[in-house]
Length: 205
Image (cartoon, rainbow, N blue to C red; front, side, top):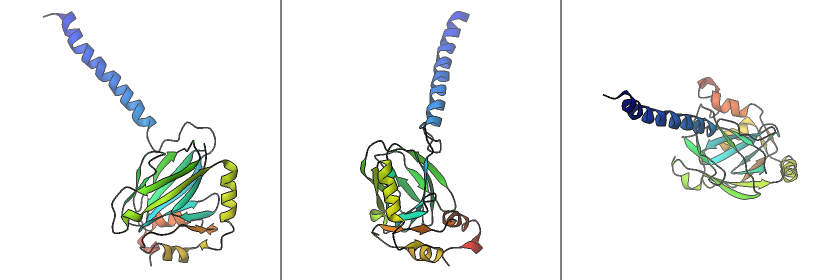
């Protein structure tokens, strides 16, 4: 028996486990998609809804909505609030960051930032039916002035995303072209989620 040797034999492995545990704990929480990025400024909020088989993007502060396309301002944090009004999908922009699932009746979150202007491809990485292969979208990154101009241009579009219009949009379709809505029902995202918790509020009827 040697107290010194046993202290070394047990102490070194325990110390390694503690150090690795601390590193893992910090790294895991730092990479949590729900955690806001360490970037100054207020994030741009975009509500993303997966449908069969297309993506709806709502800009609540700007009061506009798009289908299968979005524009992001360069160097500004974006907070995606994500849900589904269809079978489970996975929201993913490979060149910008992590994927996260979109599930009916739930809201997931993802924080991203684009540091370079350009056009990126977003997609659904979760197989969910016949139109899965065409369920992708374009992401254009521009400067702040370009983003403001884009919003202004969308506000001039003739289509409005009312509840009756949404009931038409939610019907299954494949390879949808981009669509733009100059106004959007202010409670639409919340109603999409709550219909799965309160069946009497079903938007599909």
